[in-house]
Structure formats: C-alpha cells, structure tokens
Image 1: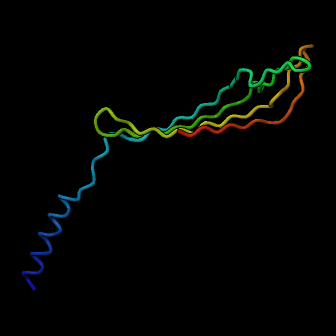
Image 2: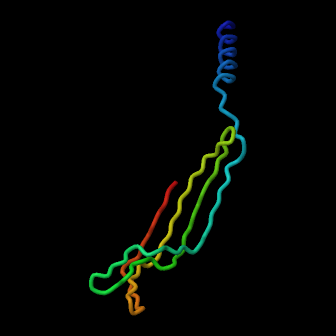
Image 3: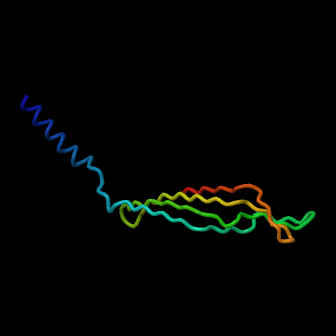
Length: 107
C-alpha cells in the first residue's frame, strides 16, 4: 500500500505541474455607454413625389467586456442596441412615422 500512496502523490504532483491553467494577465474590464444615434437617409424616392425615409435620432446603448490575453492580444465582446422611429419626410417638410426601427449589433 505504501508504494501506491507514493505513486499517487507523484502522479498528482506531475499532473498539477503539467496541467496547470494559464495565469491571467489582468482582470476583465466592463464598459457601458448611452448615446444618441443619428442615421442618414435609407431610401430616397421620387416616382410621384420626392420623399426620404430615415430613422429619427434615438437612444443607443452599448455594453462591452475586455479580457487581456497573452502578449499584445485582447478578447473583446460587444453588444450595441438602438431604437428610433422610422419616418417618412416629404418634400413639403411634413413627416409621418412609419414604424419603430430596432438594431442590434454583436461583435
């Protein structure tokens, strides 16, 4: 039994040295931002009367997490969510809301 105990201790020591998890370079950092987003015209049409379709200015929320890796490398996860009314702009200056536009960006 004594030989099995020594062999087990040696195997445990070897496994702890060989299968050791890598040390982290630094802690993970988390960022959040809230902003106003403006988009350009999505559609311009002039078959009967000139009109533009574009989103109004709306809120945008971005969340990101950064994890430093070895060397100059870094892992970044990003989620960006924004919403605004999608509006029709006529040549006479009038506007009409068509629907609500939601966008989600992942990276």
